[in-house]
Amino acid sequence: MRPLFSALPWLPEIPADFQAQCRALSKSELPPGPAIQHLAGFRLDVPKSASLARVASRFRAAGRDLTPLSHFRLGILAGATFDLIVDCIPAAGARHGIDVEVVQTPYDHVIQQALDPRSETNLARADAVLVAVDHRWLNLDRADLVAAPGEMVASAMHRLRSVVEALREHGGAPAILQTVPAPAQSLFGSFDWRVRNSVRAMIDDANHAIGSLAEETGSYILDIATLADRVGTDTWFDPVQWMSYKFPFSAEFFPCYAEILGRLLGSIRGKARKCLVLDLDNTLWGGVIGDDGLDGIRIGQGNAVGEAFHAVQHFALQLRSRGVMLAVCSKNDDQVARSPFREHPEMLLREEHITMFQANWIDKPANLQAIAKTLNIGLDALVLLDDNPAERAQVRAALPMVAVPELPEDPSWYAWTLGAAGYFEAVGYSADDALRVASYSADAKRAVVMATSRDLGDYLSSLDMVLTVAPFDAQGRQRIAQLINKTNQFNLTTRRYTEAEVAAMEMNSSLFTMQVRLRDRFGDLGMIGVIICRRSISQESTWEIDTWLMSCRVLGRKVEEGMLATVVTAARKAGVETLVGIYRSTAKNGMVSDHYAKLGFDLVEGSNDQRRFELAVSRHLMPNSPFRIVRQGEEANTE
Image (cartoon, rainbow, N blue to C red; front, top):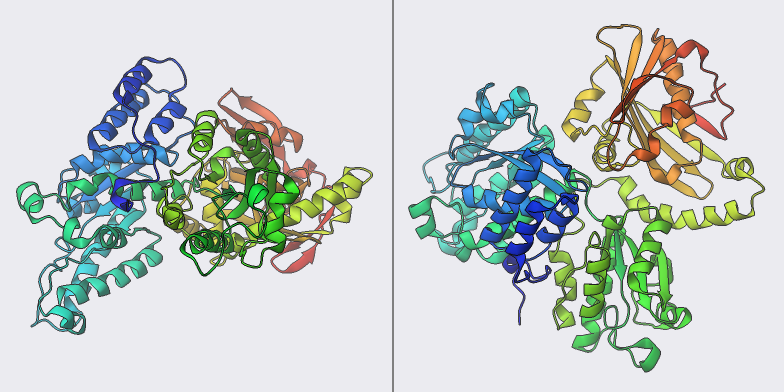
């Protein structure tokens, strides 16, 4: 049976007692966040999504902590009726690690809400505002064969730009801009593509312009045009529902629209998955390697089954090329499991492509925990692709934070299902993303050196580390924003900033900003740290450290000492006498609660939730660091 994207087939079927579970959750005293995320992980329709949304809203109103869900206040400006779509959004967000609080206004008040500084949308100080408009709102729903070529599209973009800029100016929120689906009906038939002001041609031009507008203004893109194409524009557009209810598209697609939006919000908050964990037998090849032997498994060109598994491997390699790590988790003898990677001529995946290889007879939840621990990532960063329904159920029960897509019986659909599930949604792509896999592989070599070193100092000196520091700039902007929004553990304040806000910081002379990169003799670890300092409003000679975050992968290398040394050097040049460090407690950053104390700051006030530390710049002693520090391309040291 052919899987349909609109049915969200990678999600397990909704349990018969779903409503009872929602009622029980409402009365439970246990932490509600994990339970909400678990219930969101089923194939929910509109009513079930609305039930779960109401439960989450009541917990939020009562001030309950919804960890591990990250809060996101989403404004919605819609050119059509959006109420039933809104019912689906919190559940879809929770599925991707987000507690979505929706700020909704009456439909078709887009311009009014954006331009009024005192509007509900602007006063909400949303994390982002979804501008949910289509070809009708943009006045691109009818061909205009009299207007000059491009005139209609230019007018539409002027209107949309005014909304985006007003939201930023009055509410400080970035926009989420939708691409525009094109209705299937045409005026000239196939010749529509060559008529500049036909509806299809204008929408095509508008979508290119929307992409450019998003890049220019630091907005996000929600690709609804591709979604509509995927489910079929003849079914996406429903004239009866538009004329009767002003639904922007058919109600049957409300859950999958919310799913696409939930993925985007998750990616904005750094919740996209980082590692694809692969089962082997009947997942990467047909057959059982331990029983069928190297010549008996089916993989490669020439038959439908072999090509199906080839497609899975090809997609896995594509993911790896953009920075997704690959791991193996299989109940198997290790040497037997590795033999196809080493010897089978039709295998696309080879051992060097696998960052972590776990083949043994231990249960899969334990192996998945070992993979996450070794790679120093959370279990919520893992996706397990496994053909065995029993194994999938076991992992979901034991480790609900691991994503485990349902797979159809026919392996021809495995690659499609993995891609459709959208676990690796991105809001940017940088050179550091491409470096990630090679960098994790180099960690294994570093581990060998550490095991043979006499002590920590000997180990660090042997790495030949170079720390490169520079102010925020356009080249690093995307990665800086990515780190700010996804780093949770080594993050002192967990403040989030969009790419557009990072761009504004580059031009703000009152800020001290620093991006930090690290390389050693085994490779380039890319950007691993960010610091933002603001001059105190009340004390001209004081800098407050607004943001200090680092990749956990560089813990124990004394990088924080080098970062502080750079800040102190800059502070002395700027006439700053005192540095103030703030620690704001979250569910995930307990590991850095004593960060400032370890660096010599004094605790001046604090509670369990927030602590304030101070350091007199004059008494800071520059450390003897195990690395060279390079500032803006010029070699320097910390002495």
